[in-house]
Image (cartoon, rainbow, N blue to C red):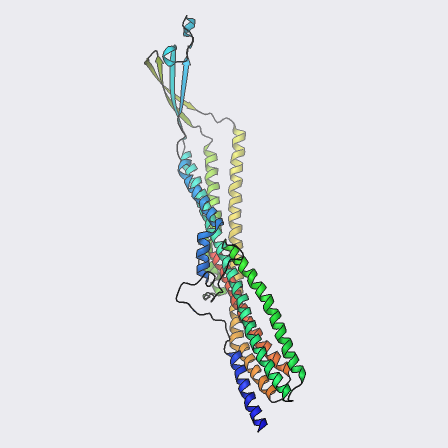
Length: 433
């Protein structure tokens, strides 16, 4: 009768242990109807960073400042007024010298306006517009980089919190296993070493939870820093990761072309190249003179007596200096073109690397979730049944539990790796997928 009762209690205990371990094979957060608190989801973090980031704000202001320079770059220079007081001593007459226009022999007023010719104003305006586009592209690149870092930090935060939850679950399981081992030891069905081993495993899990708590605080501090918040500011625990779009290495060519067209770093280098080309053309136009025109009324006494018209032009004789400027402008064009090509090649290479990494992470997750994890669950069931019947050591049960834990950790690791690869791909593309 006693053995039958003990067998029934053992079956119930084994059932509860299996339910406790196998009920949750993934980390799924509840979806709240109300707006999620800061830290619970990625869109909220990105919206906060876009509104509060001082670095992004500075880049936007620089882009706005560059845009304001376009109009003045193509404007005419300010006119010049020249006043000439001639014969201030009135031919040496007895009258005292004077600086009043009506008291001198003659006063000449000249209004002059410089007129840059040969399309130089348009070239200056085009160069300034290219510089404005470059500043705007740098602002977009700053946001793309910041968003990618936030996405990676959020994924790491999710990993640490997920591992903490998993460790807590395992600690609860080890507590139940310790009770089973203690009961078997009290009934003379197992040695004291099993109970001691179970207690050691609980201590190890508590130690790991302390380490994970430290990692979580570090992840929160890194995320808060990216959000321009105090490092110790509270953050909600992440609920879920973003869905990963169906991308494969076969999409590399299409995505590379998309990156060349939309990546803000490439756009900035293209704008730099265009600015260098406009400056080169402007330097070449400086071979030709500019014109200055003027109108000169002359005053004698209190009357305007004569009018004059003047023309003035510079003579571009300093050819050595001009040739040096032209060679400099040409070198800047070559350098800008090479830099644009280098940035494009680097980003396309990074895109291929991240696509391969994303594909590997998704395949690893699928393998572990659909094969390794079910196999580990079957191993645990078998080990638990064998231990209950006295046909297996407690160490085998612990090994089976560790296999399930490792499988779940591998799933979490693969999910986070896929998120980080996706963040890099979106950074390279310059847009969300």
